[in-house]
Image (cartoon, rainbow, N blue to C red; front, side, top):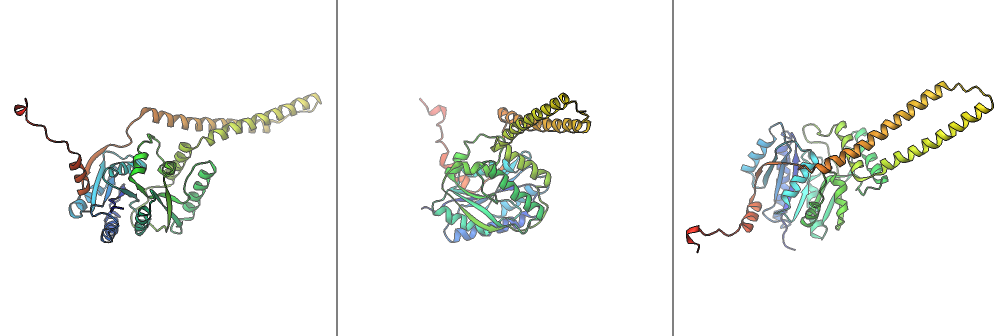
Length: 338
C-alpha cells in the first residue's frame, strides 16, 4: 500500500503545563515513523484548543511556527472534550489516510502509535488502545471506571472494556462517522457501531505528566450518565418494571388491610404508611427525573445547533496541498469573454 498520511489529533483544554512535553514526544513518534517509511512525510499532529483560558493557544502558535509537524485548531468557545475531539477528527480526515486521537496529558503511551500504524497497514480500519494496567489511577477512579464499563455492557451497549478515546481510525471510517448527526456525543460507543475491521492494542496507563485532571468526579459522573442515556433505553424500562413491582406490592398491601379489617384487627400502621409514602414519592421523583433526562436529550437533538465553532486554523503542508488540488480554474476577465 502507498505510504499513508497520518494525523494525530490532540484535544487540549488548559494544557500549558504539559503541552511542550506532549509536542516533543509526538514529534519524535512522527519523525521515527517517517524515517521508517511507515507514514508519509506530510504527516502532522493537530492540536485542538477547546476554548482554553491559559496560554495553550499561544503555545500552539509558537510550536506551529517552529515545528513543521504542528498544526492547530482553535474553537471559539469551550465545546467539551468529545466535541473538541470530533472537530479535530472531521478536520483531519480531509487530508489524512488515518487519524490517531490521544489526550494531551500523556497518560496514554505515545509509543503505541507505531503499533496502531502497523495494524492499519495490515488492513484494520479501527485500532483501539486498551488499558491493561490502571495501577497509576487511584483506587476510587479505577473501581468506578471498571464499574462503568461493566454497567454499559450489561445494558447492551457495545463498548470496549478499558478503552477511552485513544484509537486509530481510517479515512473511510471517519467519513461514515460524519453521518452520525448526534448532539449527545459518546464517541467510545459510536465508533464500534461503524462495524469496520478492527483490532486492539494493549498498553500500560501512566500517571499524568503535569497539570491537573480535567475530569473531576462531577464531570466523570455526568459523562458516564450521558453515555448510558445516549445508548440505552434500559433505564426507562427499569423504571417501568419498578412501577409494575410497586403496583403488585400495593395490591398485596391492600389485600392485607382488607383482610385485617374484616377480621377485626386494629390496623395502626402509621410508621409503615409514612415510610411507604416517602418511598413511593422518592421513586416517582426519580422516575420523572430520568424521563426528563431523555426528554432533554431529545430537546438538544431537535435544535440541531452546531457542536463546535472553529475560530482559527493553523495549516500544514498536507492541508495546503489538499486545497491546491481542489482549487477551481480561474475565470477569465469579463473583457475577454464573448
